[in-house]
Length: 294
Image (cartoon, rainbow, N blue to C red):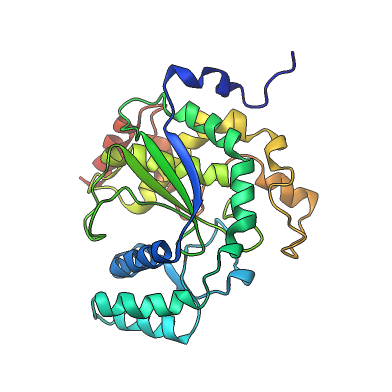
């Protein structure tokens, strides 16, 4: 019998995986998501995010940038300027935002991304079936993976109610994944993004130590994914036809494609974490990193 390309699928029933639903954000969901980004925009900018009012057909999706993709156009730029000058987001802001997003929202934009993300669903489950064995995680019962054309590339939305106060919903969680009109993602395939965000939301209570910087949290998650899922992600079969690069008019040499293989560490995450990382122990790793602030 041939070896299954993702062997961990054979043992996934030892710890039941959350039910995963893949969908496209509705217009209202896109408005809510971007409104949440604007609500926290000053904090995001302080963290290092750069508002990017990019046309989705020319997005520079790279792990080496820290862009926060927002609706394009002068109206959106004006809205962001007002918020960064100290004017808080409110109902009027949301109404303006809806008018802006409505002009560029069409469901057909997401079709290639949805097909691509569903095509990788077995790989996604295989990665998650590795991560659920980590101790101290709060695993949700259901995960909704929703495609958006905005945000940083991938983000979690483990919240109920107002976006200013995040509280984990232990039964239901939402992962936002940015896609382009030609079905590309910020990583070589969407499974890597989902695994990263899934670990962030499952380890939410561990990682939200106030003494950790966002860059330290990102590094801890990256190192854990690399350790737990490295064998699967080093398999070149997952990168074949991940998305149609020709349609995006992108050319990659064989050397560039080889660089995409495996799970890359984000360049802006904090490398000081590496020496404090404890294998398969997020809680101890967080304690070690938090001690740096003392």
